[in-house]
Image (tube, rainbow, N blue to C red; front, side, top):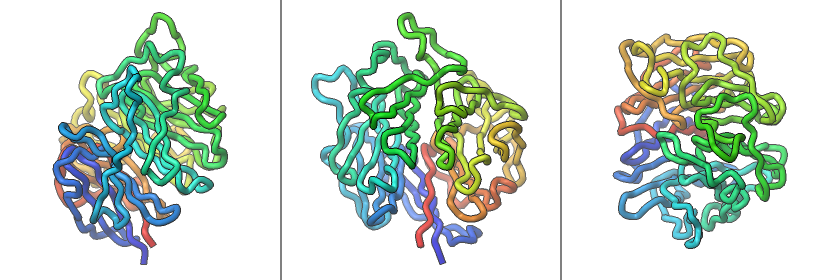
Length: 360
């Protein structure tokens, strides 16, 4: 019987929640990397199962850690992502780690703050900067959002190694079709948050960006100013908010089984950044954003919480599991595609990210 693993990155370490494919009972493992800020933690099973963690420490700075035994032992990557000494950018943190495509099994990507993108082609041991993005002609007017100037979303075209998108806050969406040598902005139709003096094609605060793995010209984003879909590879965007109580929020997740099904957790405005009226709700669409329905069964009332941009995810079971963690340290799961919810065991430090894996 397969095992279900939920990996939680927090302000003070990582935690693993284990179950079987039924997902009825959970066992807590951790803290892992105790005391370190774990911004992201993922399991790459394309070849030898390898776990990657993007870790931060006020003394040692940001580094990538690698484990070959599901988090029991870790090695620090000495050649973690770094800007060159003559760069004007400072690397404040590693926001996300994304394994590459099936066709490139040794490739790993990392998005960082200050905004940039790095790639490793040797399973995470050495890293190279995408200078075409770092030195983009608009970069002199890249300004941070409240969470920093971060490259937080990496959306790969699984069928084409040349195509990918990244989301940078508070700058916008960028696209490459030549493997990262050159990049173009893709923000048409999105409401702007910052009016730049020189470059009018940036100033769009994307909060989370996803690509449909089955139709790679379709993308979705939760933005500072709304929820959007693109049907032409990001060239233009349309709002998809029918049924949502607010347009503000951070996380977004897509079902691996049905890419018309997505999940968001709306929050009350950029001023308050918590659930509206204390009503913790997950909203689901099953028609690619034409309409949304509220799902609250099993979720607590009077919950004035925040869910951060990397803290909502799905699993790859036939009946999709959905998971999210709050900044207060609570974890919730649905094993029926978001229809009903239950609280998972444990209260954790501030939850920064949630990822899943099925281990056969």
